[in-house]
Length: 322
Ligand SMILES: Nc1ncnc2c1ncn2[C@@H]1O[C@H](COP(=O)(O)OP(=O)(O)O)[C@@H](O)[C@H]1O
Ligand SMILES: [Mg+2]
Image (cartoon, rainbow, N blue to C red; front, side, top):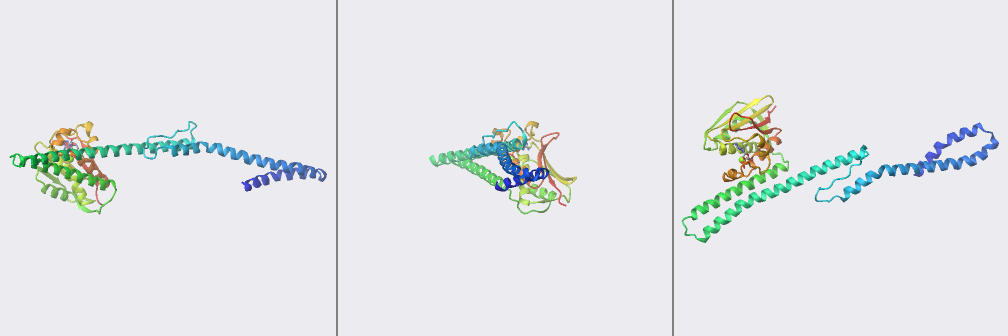
């Protein structure tokens, strides 16, 4: 501050000196006595004015700071006021509100995910408990075998859900397991050969479609598509692997009921099932497609439901290896 006062006084000096040069030596002393203090006063006033202006300009920033400090730390529910005056501070407040929007959405998604996961785990656990209690209640009962079979089915279901949750947690953490050059057609053929579906599966794979990928993750993504196709197919499944431009494309096409146009995004949401009763009976928990899409995206590709003349057609795209 002291520097700036001196600086301002120094700036005021040249005009004073110029005036003095124009006047005679006699009046110089009088003028120096008057102009000196005047210049000093002007400098002090200028500095005080600048300080007031700066304080005024910073007022919205301080208000923003206070509002941010008052926001609840755990729930990003509040928003900061956007000054109607526009300008940088208004833009900053707008950005902060956008960020708070995103935080709120992600907090809501996290809550919904935990609630859905708990619900999914609770259902087979309750079934398991009932089966075991019944079996213990009358061990001689001829139906004990049935009860134990139910209990085993519930254990399998629990195991699948926990396994899927584990995979999602790994995918969410963003860890990138080692990748290698893989022939996608060979991967698909091997995968199909290892399964024993109730309906015939035909594979048409172009040779030499290579991608850089993690084998077990791609196995899982394609496996999830095949599991769905096997679950819903009426009589046949067709799998096609080919190169299209710079991409490797795998289509899994079944002749089941298909996925309605309006639900083609929703099926990729965690725990989403179109027909809860039908899917639950068949043992799905609504994590297969979200996991498969997340794996595709982590490989720089994508997964979506495409149009087809019949049934469901799931299309996985991955960048071809260079
Ligand atoms: N091939 C398919 N044909 C018809 N509906 C499907 C198909 N694949 C998926 N869906 C629908 O999408 C939902 C979500 O699939 P997914 O995430 O794999 O969960 P899950 O198989 O555990 O139910 C399924 O519950 C089902 O309603
Ligand atoms: Mg599934």
